[in-house]
Amino acid sequence: MFNFSNQEKITIILLLILIIIGAGIVLNKNINREDNFIVNSASNISENNPPMQIETPSVIIHIAGAVKNPGVYQLKSTDRIVDAVKIAGGETEEANLDVINLAALLKDGQKIIVPYKTYSETGEEIKANTFNHTASVYSSSPASTSAKININTANANLLQTLPGIGPVLSERIIEYRNQNGLFGVIDDIKDVSGIGEKKYEGIKDLICVQ
Image 1 (cartoon, rainbow, N blue to C red):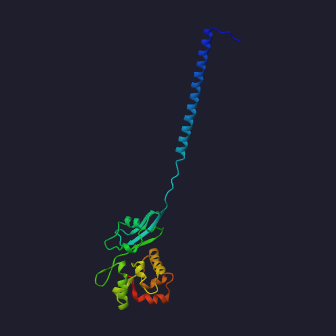
Image 2: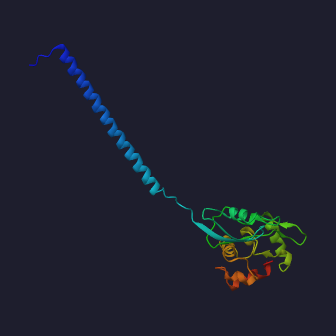
Image 3: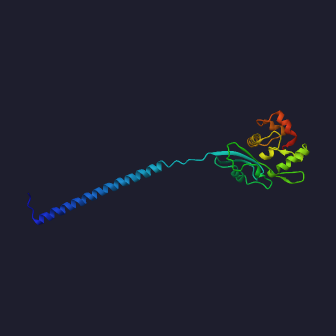
């Protein structure tokens, strides 16, 4: 249809090549502009809306007893009693950590009593693994002060050596003193759910608070 000379054909081909190159350059610039817009938009969104950080709620606890710095402290709700002992300066030499659950989670408003070691009349430390020996002392001399169980420091096993005190009541006694603090006098134990006047009469000569 068209009769082009060789020179004209070469000129047309060169023009087509230049058009293609020009179109490619313009398209590349547009793509770069779009990419920069997306990046800048994402950056602005990130700056204006920083990622939400979930904060662990805190709890206020009161730790007393055989720790170096007793007092009220703020900790995380994921912390445990062992963390409360640490923040209070650690336990003293007279602390008896065997009778409390150091792995228990903290609760807001909780009062933690770190008990002191207890000793027999001969000066021997009364440990959890000696409660059977202690019980035999009760049977021979139930009114002896040295043989009485300290309801402020005794662990569950030791409390269960008392007549009528089983696993459930022993845990209630420990939970009560953790929540309300030390018993002031022995008949305060009647405030523990499940310990009425009759049960109290059966144990009052076998317990003490100091």
